[in-house]
Length: 557
Image 1: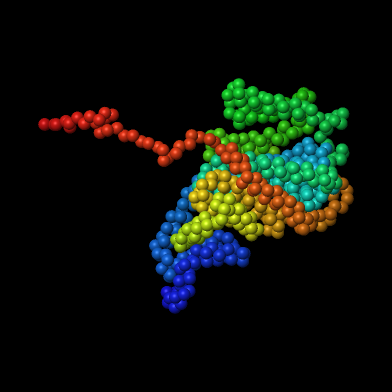
Image 2: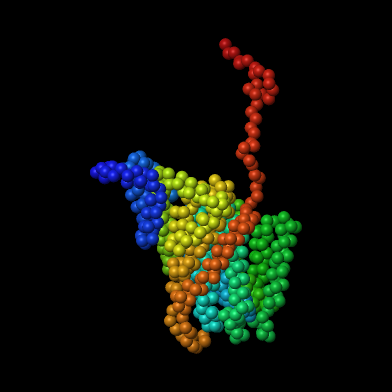
């Protein structure tokens, strides 16, 4: 019956045969825009158009026999094991109390400066990004802890909400980011290389956020006032801030690390770890024995900062120096997070249950999207959709530059409606082969897409970071106990407008990565480069290395 329907109108059948790939892609976009679950939309489009392709004679029924192997291939993918490890690590750290201590200590450190709390949020956001890798954990933690304090001391609501949401999204690009794992998997590249390439751009983006806060405080100091003296609780007995001993300690640590790297010939990461351990032991001894070697702020900064920095070394340091794979690094990070939670006396059954439930939900979400994407791609590639996309993108004017401009505009627009997992599983597999044919380094291309996809968390009105902040920010006036007065809440419009400047900064960061590719490639290991076309293999002559004929065979009687 289906064949009769398709054959009843030859023009329609011919049109479908000729334009199956773009029709399939457009139908998938329509399904997503209508709000159907992504995984099921992808799988439904793949199966529906697969049946239509079989009826039209474009595909053979045997094509779907490859589907089980494609699905089992997902389960055998070792790279994706890092996703639940890093998710679990982030969720444990979110509830361990580490974020609270970091925000309080760094807020006190920068409190005397205009915008000090905003600086603290950005820096702690970068630290949490390097330890948790989960945007939701960072945004919710900083929204619960920092936003009430910023509102209490008169911060502009748009600036406060924008800084918190944007700083939380640093977990998207600073390793160990989940999206970098998925991008590396989809592009067929090493996760470790993707991490190394993304580290410097992530730090540059952090600096741009800090620069924006500085500009706001210079142009309008009232939008981010300094903490009043009574709010700076970590001070010396004589009332001084005690920054001198902290500066001396930091200088000594830098000098000691450089000396160990050169004199003892240690790797820089090992030297930094040893110096950090010595500083931590010194700070704890100063606290317990009241030695007076460090000021209170110096002691507090070292004691609070070293555990997350140690966790960063445990995860990223071991990956960068080649001791562990990303999956093994994630496992060690999860173990380290449990140890920190025990040290903070926050580890209990409820915490473990909540973390494991959330990890299982996110992991299933990722796997189901990937399953749907595999079903869709099986049919899409079967109707030569990859060739259609390749011809479409390779035919763009401007060559490589034109390709990069169009791709980044496409990803930026789709980020309004799709989150980074959906973009990574749907769009990246189509773009990667075209980028490779244009001679674009796929590690650099993956980091560029990661920076662009970061805007998916910040786009009003669908950005997930904005939703996370909205869920924890008071939207009505509330009574603030420490100040003893009523404080107005933060409206949804203020959260949206606060995000706009940071979306612009992220777009500027995309342009910086395109203009200065060395930001990515400089972080990669420069091993020996071999040109396969120049490899020459010489085999000896049958008689050995000489041109003489081989000896006669031995005769057995």
